[in-house]
Image (cartoon, rainbow, N blue to C red; front, side, top):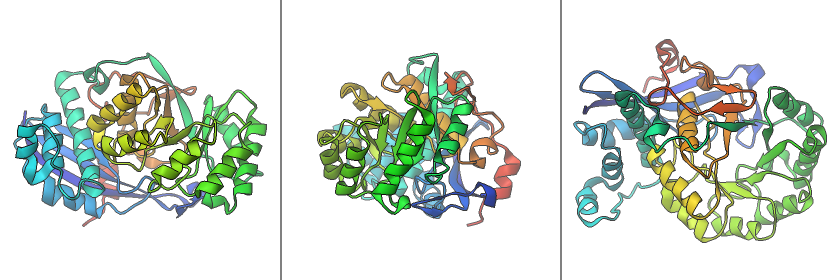
Length: 388
């Protein structure tokens, strides 16, 4: 079964006013993604997702162009089962023959950013196709599930100090035993972030996991103060405390606190993660399968987590496609114990595909449907596809 065509669509879905929220990204008014379809010569279709931004919105025009004008022609005719070879062909570009003959990378100049995101969407679609062809969920192709079910944590938490307890308690009422809230520059001051976290802990009690996420917006001194003030609040992790450009600063913070430090949703490929690990910057690795290089690269990053005895927690904020990609990786990885579940009123999670995400009382079971186990809602895709 060979690749006959690769198509990319920028999907942009307006968020109803009642469902919008404000964070350091500003007031978010749309959910955006690049939907990738890989078509085979026998008429099958695999689906993937590529992201232009880790938040809900972002222009996908450059990713669509990269797939259409740079990757598509190079990959047509390749076997859908040769996923690793296709990854290397895409990553090394015109020097792929050197990489093949010498066994090391010869990456193209654009070996981060748009190209890797575009590769991610293609990679997800290829794994989806391979699972369909073999009649098996992707997790089975990755070695099988390490557990029968996994805890999901509710990802949201934008409310102010007066309402954050009620907001997060609403997540717990749905069965979640872990919640994530946003902090950082959206709060204007470190003091107010601290106040909101304390309000959350007071409302939830000691048994509920609380993750905090600063989206990389604190300075090193601010992040140190945040941790110092909340050292006794038993935070499960502190996510992206500092800009991803400052890996040494993140490592410096980790050396000063017992709060686990998580990051990785903005990183590309295992090579970025190796640098973080060399700096001893992380306790939790969070690759996004629609950004970092797909399921193929997520599993390589998961192997790093296992080797360094750290936790793997794929970033699953996106559509049902990247969510299920992350779920399959998490279940196949011994280092993963929790899965992110978006509670941001996301239509890409619930309306893009016909299947329910499958989180029940705060838990999700190991995937059983072939491939990603998803079927597109073609009417939804048609309605919200942007013309480029």
